[in-house]
Length: 143
Image 1 (tube, helix red, strand yellow):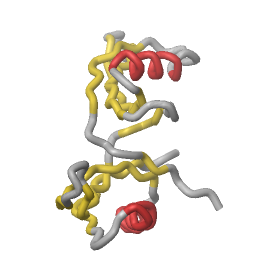
Image 2 (cartoon, helix red, strand yellow):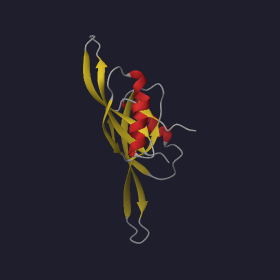
Image 3 (cartoon, one colour):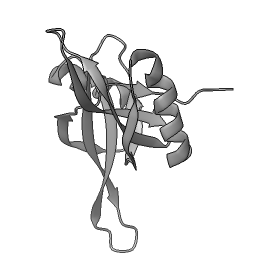
């Protein structure tokens, strides 16, 4: 199971008008620890950054799964509530689960989420879908 960390990378970015500006941008990294997440974001970002790269923050997220779409350029946070029945009280309970979904737009993210969940037998409701500021997502390196 993946452990997703949000890492904020701070560096000088070349803007469209040719000037440089110090930016802090969030990225997602699959890692086993905070230390590994920091090392991974430095490893992944260094080839694309000229100058100093600083990791401004690393925090563990509640993301349980990510749905990919290589043609998409945005990331959306989808909160889904799974409906379960408490065996003792026979009452409905909702457990909210967070997903990160790639999409070119809101509808694309919705469609990718629904497609990714198509094999799920449990009942769920989509609580919210929000565009994030996440720039990119880095999977764990195997081997």
